[in-house]
Length: 255
Length: 255
Image (tube, rainbow over all chains, first blue to last red; front, side, top):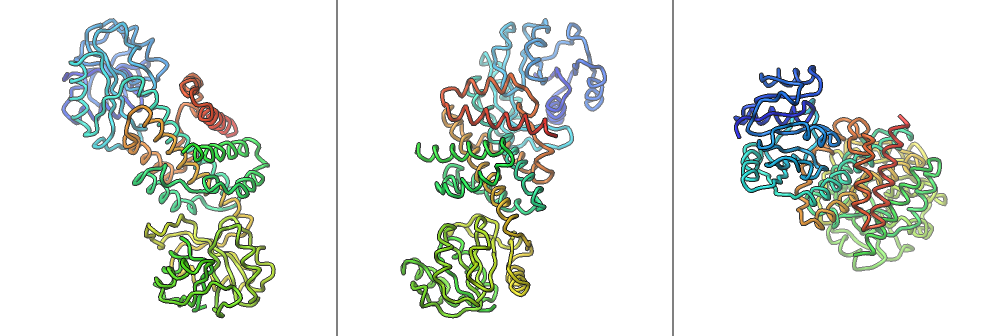
């Protein structure tokens, strides 16, 4: 699987294709819906590009790195049934390839932005394939860029994706809310950073379940209610604070 | 303010008294409700201890580091009206000292556990006082252990405390939920750690508001609904996922 074609030219396609090229793979071609974005990535890789899915060269592997809800349509247009084809999505099942013969998933569990460089060394790559040969090939490619390769089937990946949303997108939203509260009180967000760092360090070096603290966890209902009252000027935030506190209280009861 | 008496012998009292002693302050006495805990801390500090609030020595400063909901009662028992007295709480107002003449707040914004050592260098200490002299003295003490001193009044501190709960206790709860989801799918929590670290690094080096991602933020309602359906086996978690997603969607609309 030396020659790889990328279907897509966005963040994941850009970062991943460059990393694979750096590690000895030949990026044969880049496809994108628009010539402009195809050309930008092809220039970075010094490879050819294409905007017509009926006119693709024959690589050893297709990597489909496009928006989740376009994967099925795009895959259906690609005529080539035999060449192994994978997508890089956390939320799309392997069944999206039902009209192909060799297929799988190559899901790097990380947020990608073209502006940020990324260290692949320990980046988890979740692999799934419909046959052993394809699986072995995908593991080999994974190993060439990271030492953190996992076999994860579609059912597990669905849950993993929810967990990623909750642990990353939702936590970031909690930080955004806090930043806003501080701004309202003319305080700098910097004030919270040492506490946030310490909290995360404890959670990751130990286990978040073992280091939970706070008024809801202590069942200090007086403070929880005081906070809810203080947030009554913002109905949505008040509801959010109340529901998360309740969830913390009830999680503790479950133990 | 050379001689300090600690009212309390818990996590904050232990860590803070030892740090102040290391920086040249004389810990005169430790009070605790039980002789056992008073003695444990007094032994660490090689100072005397006391369990009778009517029998306290006269220090230059009382630091009250006990549970929030006991502060008012304990403070009312202390007869000494003139000696400056502060508490270390994030959620209790300065008005709890209304029967004293010199008072304030000395709130180190961090989680304290006796088992973890703590670097005070850059730890934010939030100070408030009812007069300039006490304020100046508290700033001086703060500066002796940290270079990150802030004047924060009671109204600001209330909001700061809510922000701390949301950005630390709530985020830790999000991680706990994710850990549970992965366990259910026989996946290691380690799998998520690089993504969590990267997310936090981006949020803290930039601004969480600017780096929000995820299906709710992209208004990818199909995935949000898919996740909600996948969580339907756990009604509370389903509600939580749904409400936080809605809050992210509506926050974006507010911009």
